[in-house]
Structure formats: structure tokens, C-alpha cells
Image (cartoon, rainbow, N blue to C red; front, side, top):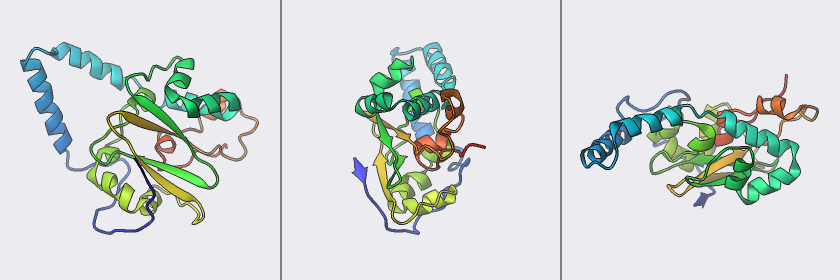
Length: 212
């Protein structure tokens, strides 16, 4: 589902990068209850869960940055990424086949912001674990109701003429933002380009870092 929202609503609290809701989130309690039930029913073991958590924790935004850097430097790859992000990621040895991955290209006239309004669906295969603020109720609600204010709280102020498009992740589809390539990066190779790509820029709350 894609939303285009430009109105403001002060009904919700501010989003604080690096902070979440109360330490014991509702989603954490649900996760613990479901995990206990699965173990109790013999559908999965605690060791299998531990190994999977360890696997997820080893994933980082570096994989997503590699994808973006390749797209910036190779127009043909960018076209393949926008057509089929899962297949394009696999070209770089990144297996994201567990869920459909869609790449969204930012342009000088269009900026994408990713949220999951229902829970915390996130492209973990390319970005690793989600930050606490992404899962917080404040972000999940206000990213839709007042996205420009949310971006401003992250230090990102878009010109009025730039369309801001909010996209809602689901259990079946995750999004990767292809941020606008920063000016002055034309001479950089892929490895150097990847250092300009941050996790937040691939969520859409920030822009890519300008080269030094």
C-alpha cells in the first residue's frame, strides 16, 4: 500500500532517533508468547531459535549499501534492481528470497519514506535488525500522519516541491529505498560510494552522506 500524506497531526509524541517506546514493548511480549508456544508444541527448538537470532544479528546495513552503490555506478544494474530487487540482490550474493523485496528510487522530485504501520516489518536480509525507533508507535503512526515533521526530527528537510511518498511494509513485501546519489560523488568507486549509504537513508528518514 502506498500513501501520499502531507497533513499534520500533533496527536502523537515525537520520534527520537535511537530511542523506542517503553523497554517492554507489546510486540516483544507477543513474540515471547509465540516463541514459548512454538517450543512447547515441538514445532521448533530453543536452539534453532537461538541460531536464527544469531544469523539475523550478523546481518548489517552494509549489504544494502553494496546494493545501492552498485545501482549508483551501474545503470543497467539499477534497472534490474527496480524491476526485481530479490534477483538483483542475489547477483551480489545477498539472498533476500524469504520475502519480496522492492527497491524504490528517490529522485530530485520524489522522496520515499518506509514504515510498517501494523508492527515492524523490515528488510532484515539487506539492512539487518531494525532500529528501536522504527518499531516505536510514535514513528509507525506519525510517519503516515505527518511525515515531513518526522523527517525534520531526523534532520531531513525536503523542499516543498519534492513529493514525499510513504510506503507501508507488510509481511509479504519489504522496501529498500535507493537514495539520491549525492553531488560530488561522481569520481568515487563502488567501495567509496557504499560508505556514503547509511541505514537511515535506505529507510528514507535521511539522505545519503555527502562525500568529504
